[in-house]
Image (cartoon, rainbow, N blue to C red; front, side, top):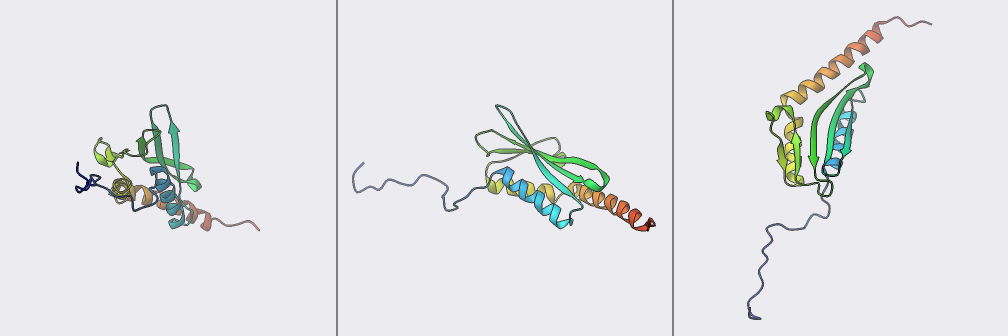
Length: 143
């Protein structure tokens, strides 16, 4: 190669963003938002399980007042590499959706939370909590 011929940049991406968030950080924040938006009536947690070959993240939605919790979806990735991440959600028809990057992951999770099923779960839990709260409010208090 002559000194006059520049060496081309063959990388199809740039590194402008300083921070790339892991799936776990993104899910932890979504869990916090659900708790805030439900004014504490719902709680969420990201349960992490790790083996030698796989990290599994389960997104758990719970309603402590009625002592009920359920797994909404799971994600998994290699222990050393958070991307690609596979997302398993019942609305995906038994197939995992694979997120190759943080942006892909955000889009998949947005689709999960925007689904009719996720909305149904959240609204059902809020309704059940509301029933319990109304019962407590209508129960005469002893003085």
